[in-house]
Image (tube, one colour):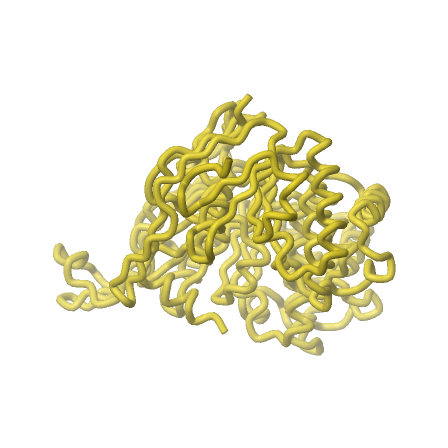
Length: 277
Length: 231
């Protein structure tokens, strides 16, 4: 037997640059900014694969390009160059950054789910929790109100939001509850790939434990692949099978999560691991 | 019949901040046969754990090969296999047990074991039944099953970790100081369990401090400072 796995997501040479760039950029970078022309390379040649059922962790300091990667994948902006393919979209044969806006909306609504660090970005705060989920289901083409309510109940129960509050707007919820509603919304259409951007940041420890356990259960139950961005190494250690370390828009190193934490190779990763309290 | 062949293994750690290279183990040559149990001894700092962690790929080997005869892939070099292959082997064939816990927060001992069984594809009811069975097998007192393992003693943690590792019924099991800080009574318990595993034909390689314990369990004892088996 050999592991002939098809990656669920494959990113090749992603570049997100702010500014026109110059020929000498790569030799003149101060962190991620070119000293000569002032261009900022938010993502500088990022390549990665996410395999079926795995959690790929991404760590790195603020400004290292983690969120840039995630938001490029969710079409929040168009990258400067690079390609991304999805197993569930035309059998990985089409660069999703090259397709029409309508196709991109279809991909967002049927193949991917995104949970932002800030619930305000992923939720309509004035709509009810149930409507937030329904919105996502409608976007994927369903119109049956009964099915939608049933699905909303199922999802909110899965994230332990009392269904007695499902008709309330998330603006009335605590941060942890909002985050869980966002997760249930992201799961509404059984996505093959879940993008989680700092989902536990800013939550108190007991709520964080709840969210971590939820992510673990989602992975076990649905076999979903997850791209998990966090600057919290404890979160990465708990959840990620493999981990990528980002620095200044580039990948500093990648490996099995326990190897990254126990035997880090890169100078930055060594500093990061030794900063653990 | 060999299951593991280590040739010329060396591991150095390079610490960028100090501009320092620390040499751990070097020139390790070792053969483990199927169903055999090798105990590793040696002074602290000699690189005993390093060898196990290189086999488990928690450490990247600096030199040498670690060939393992896997069920899934045939002979495979664990030092250079892909990360996905290592993950597969860890899920299906290779176990690693220490006294350190790696448990999700707010997860009880029983849930910890159950989750691993559910991850293998069983439903909740079957997982619960199996979890109870395996926890009894490893003699973790029943009144501890519903408790968070962070409060467990060293021996209790070890038994939980053994139970957790055995769910996957590994063919190759690594034991990193499983008897450290255990009292004599618990040591006898652990010894019993290891003999049971040996009866199931599990190939094992473990680090121990007391030679006495290893008698009757280990087939061979490897002294890491000489790089050779004790006669």
